[in-house]
Image (cartoon, rainbow, N blue to C red; front, side):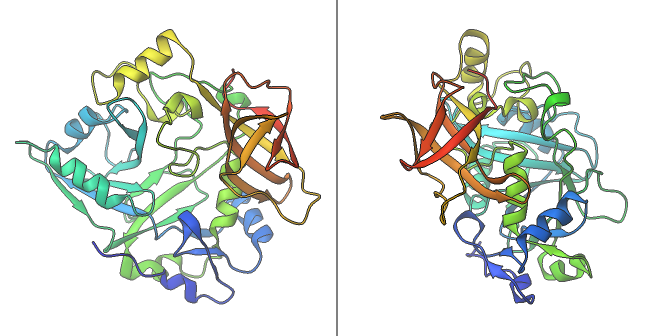
Length: 342
């Protein structure tokens, strides 16, 4: 696979290119506040064609993927969706897989730029099984929609986000679903031929990643490579609730999942922040978070929500006082809302 060219949808009038993890697609199309409202109303479509796409074929594909990752996948029905994690031997999150099977092949979408690494590792684990692994990012692209319905006949492979779950035999480190801010959230991803990207958008309103990210942040939805680092374990981000089955048997990293769940608490925890927006500039993702003179974590996601104003997600030390007002980059105050309880 070669580096992807910028999306053809960036030629749309008003499109402003994104940067960082969302480079190559539009951050917005001229009015990010309106675009957020469109998503909340169940309208619009988001260009996610920078995401990677991996395709699995062969009769052993689901049982084999089940044995390597954190979620129960052996009985995944055609058009059903799942979220699963690839963990390091020490249990750190390496890949987040959005999985949907169409009855003949399994489609996986992943964060931008990570498909070659994932496909290479999966291919090295095939051994004598009837499985083929292909990085098909050059040929297929992803569109996001604020819809919670699974794909039907005539629609492309469609992954429906299970967040906030819970899904199967798992655990919630945050509030129960009925009390979760994402309880009414609807989101899905369509995998379409890259050459037909504009055709699948049709005459619908395009929405940029700024709007999609703002709604992700207020839903407390973790994102790989944004809210994670090389030390992240799933418990810290309340990711077990949709991506981890606690009694599915052995897989790489399973020991850490079980040990922390059964015997301890995660060393860090995700918090939702309301930031002081009185200044002209907001802090950037990665900014240090302090409690008094002590560094306690870092800002991982930052967004401007059309109702809540400047908001963010942060990963802080578990011992951080949940009632304390935090400081970001030394002078921006931030009020916490618990996501993962200490």
